[in-house]
Image 1 (cartoon, rainbow, N blue to C red):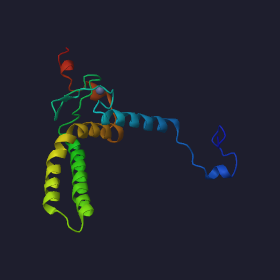
Image 2 (image 1 turned 45 degrees about the horizontal axis):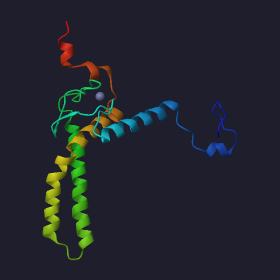
Image 3 (image 1 turned 90 degrees about the horizontal axis):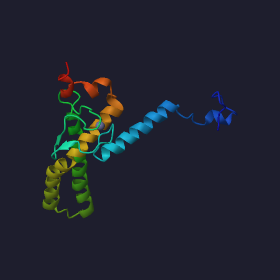
Image 4 (image 1 turned 120 degrees about the vertical axis):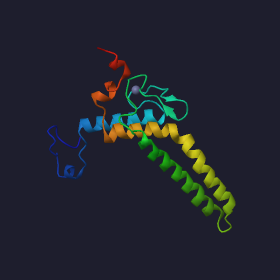
Length: 162
Ligand SMILES: [Zn+2]
């Protein structure tokens, strides 16, 4: 331990050592990592429940495990489009620039162009489910943390109650 219990340094050398972040910050980081791991596996970032999709591109209205409303506001899931577009452009860049760099100076432009066009069509379709869960993770972890309304607002079961 480089510092005393009260946070003061023990020696002059300790003044140059980084101060560890407070416990709350470490716990928040740990929770963000856990949420990311759940999202990468295609599960609910909050409770890790699988089966969030109805078909390939459609997502359920609410999480079957924690009742989290996946569409927190009108047009909410358009944030997933950003992830999908980014992944598509990344793959396109790798195919186009990588293909040209590997085969230079005699670049087979017809092949590289065909593979580029194919990647622009296929990657958004394949990446869509992951784009949705990644967007949910980013929004919950950094932009707008969970609040009580996310679990109860617009709940069709709640509307039936008197
Ligand atoms: Zn959930």
